[in-house]
Structures are given as structure tokens and as C-alpha cells.
Amino acid sequence: MTTNQDERRGTAETMHQTAEALERSEAILHESAEKSPDEETRRRLHRLGDEVTRQALAIDKRADAL
Image 1 (cartoon, rainbow, N blue to C red):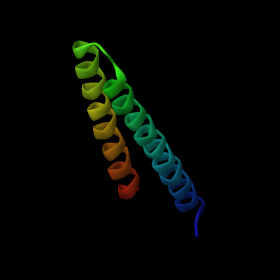
Image 2 (image 1 turned 90 degrees about the vertical axis):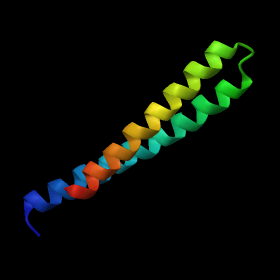
Image 3 (image 1 turned 180 degrees about the horizontal axis):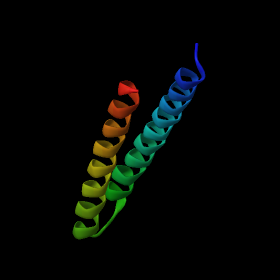
């Protein structure tokens, strides 16, 4: 295996780990949203959680393409 392939594999692994961390953050955002007494705060937290999920999926997809 070449150094370039090793680097790509390492980069992809780091990207997947980042995506997993984002997914954990997304779960926390949705959980916090459900606990919020304020409707607008709930909506904002859910929207943010959804955006974090989209970003995590995009990172995973890019990592898979390396």
C-alpha cells in the first residue's frame, strides 16, 4: 500500500469519526429540544439537529469516496 493510500484511509477514518461525533451531537440537540419549555427554542434545536445530521451524512459520503 502506498503512502497516499494510507493517508486517504486515515483521512476517511477521521472523517467517519467526525460524522459519528456529529450524530451524537444531533441526538443531544433533539433531546434538548424535547425538554425545552419554549416552542421556538424547540423548533430551532430540532432544525439545528436536522442540519447536523445532513452534515454528518455528507461527511460520511465524502469519506466513502476517498
